[in-house]
Amino acid sequence: MKKTTFQRKQYVIKKLLIFMIVGFVSNLNAQTTLLTVGSSGTVTISSEGTLNISGLELSPSTDFTINQTQVSVDLEATSLNGTPSMERVYSADSDIQDFTGTISYSYADNEMNGLTHDASLFIYDTASSAWMEYPDTDSSENIVTSSFDSPLQINLVTVGAPGSLSVQDPMASGIKIYPNPSSSVINIDYTENLELTLFNILGQKVLSTTSKTINISNLEQGTYFLSTKDSNNNINNFKIIKR
Image (cartoon, rainbow, N blue to C red):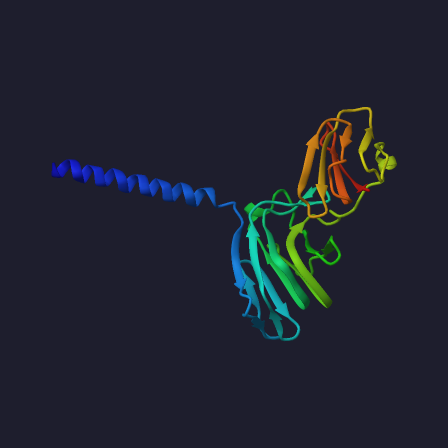
């Protein structure tokens, strides 16, 4: 009887360990909260100090205070106008306001997502509703650094290929997109097959299709980016305006 009880306890412990391991593995790529500044709290970084948020370093030019916000990291790439970023994206639930100084983003080779070490820093703020690219200013391979003399709003931070925000001229690529702007559908005129992916301004995928007629009537008004990939894996990105 004692032996049976002991074996049962072993079984329960094994089941509990398996549950814990599965739970841990399933959350490896989930968004993880790194920093929480409560409603009545602040974090002040001195002009000679640096705040390292798990690889994202903020070094202000003057004493800088972060008020109520929560900073998280997502270990998946986002889209920069159809071009994938590095597989780590930092986000703040409300913009970090009026930052001046230096921002550094440290990364490991296994997070590069096909990028090279000449990658740029990309920052999104909700005030302008757009990603902005900032070239790397240091010579280290696994660190991207940019300095800011004008006040910066920070909502999302990642690293991507230089020129990721450029948008091609449809006629120059041989791809005709019409009507644009549109309130209902957009048509893609091209002789070969295409894989089409539509992203919103935050880089979130809205839809993907191989159909050359795309219904956008249910989307909110605003700016979107259409990424096209042909049979030779050539990628072109186009700005789409939904009325």
